[in-house]
Length: 186
Image 1 (cartoon, rainbow, N blue to C red):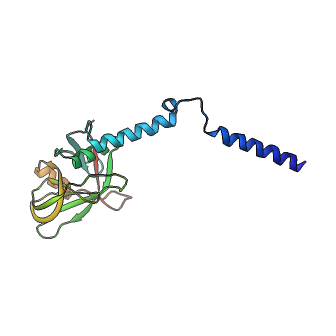
Image 2: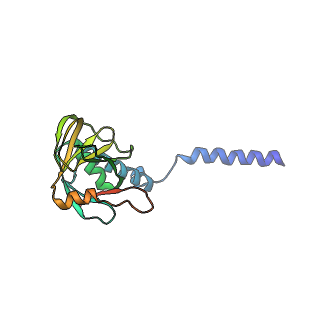
Image 3: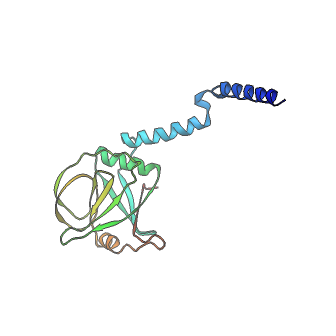
């Protein structure tokens, strides 16, 4: 009896394995295929800069005043804008404010592939935003002499309100650090 049940069970599994790849839905109608194709399309658009915005909205702290970052016309800025166009970013802020260098940097998750077109930068102006390989955004909120390899990705208008928002961004309760919120204008 057990041998008979085992043989039937094996036949059912063999038929199931054989038919697993068979589907009456063509790939273009398969729902999972549509989701995968849409995600792949968004990633390709981000990398190619298709329909990328020319400005991003940046808030220092949850509910902070929104500031517009004008983007440079390069593949690095286009890729970042394309990715932000698919999902807003909420990034922790790290500071580096030794003597004359007043900057913040934001680490981008490694799942984002961002092209690096860096060149040596010796001077940064308040409001300059750079990409630093690998996957870091650097904001200077005061003028500084530097010697770094960066790709410039954008600029903020450096008003007193902007500098104050950067400097006085509160630590987010429950997180233990400051956050920056980056999105596209809706």
